[in-house]
Image (tube, rainbow, N blue to C red; front, top):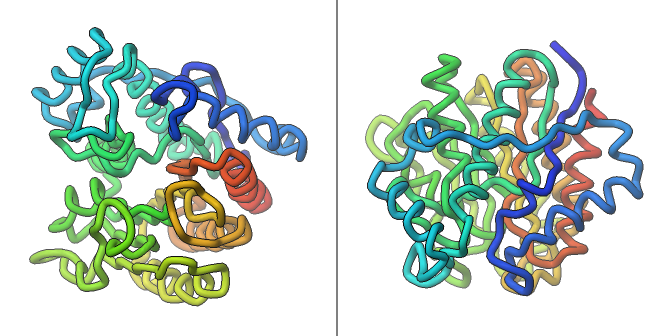
Length: 316
């Protein structure tokens, strides 16, 4: 098993977004990587260029009809891919394919032992459903990664851990009845924030009952409340003994994000990354893949993602 932490940086990955001035704009990756270089994190990790996925990888999770729709609207650059949150900007199909391809390339490098941990900053598009876009998310790279882990690597018991302020509904409902997908999500209470899901009573259906843990956090919750809730989350993951951990580390849960109400500091993200690294060492041969997720205050996302990267690199 290699000891390096891999990170994916490049213009093709940064291009996933909906234009300058949009909350999910193309400047998000540069904000993160500029600070990472200032902190000399670039000297502690292995940097890889983005990779584009082919359509066959998208079809492991998404319906062919939905993919066709994205291709059509991406070519015209008009309209929306959902009810009004996700614009169909020109070239969004190719940009979304780069997100997926980079996540899958990272997955392969971790499983082949080239690196122990990996981080893809522009990724973690957890709202997209199998047949639709949602909440700035065109293709659900998280769901695709889960399907590819099963189909190509015969890894069934996957832990998906999400600390984005928004509930990872596209992952949750796609695998709600899957007993091998361990789902842990700490998010702002859906009474106050999109998408309005993720109640504490949602624990999985049928054979999967009890394999999902949703922890709604009250608006203005800070680090103390996060650390207390994390104890429950960590114990849940530890009991389930996953074979691989996927970590969606959205930075919109940091104080002063423009569209959410939580008040964590980057210490929450560092703690989660550090503890997940330890759980991965215990149960998964160290295999941990982090995806940047949301975050619309550029300073916040830079500090939170650097905290995640530093914590993962520190475990090597």
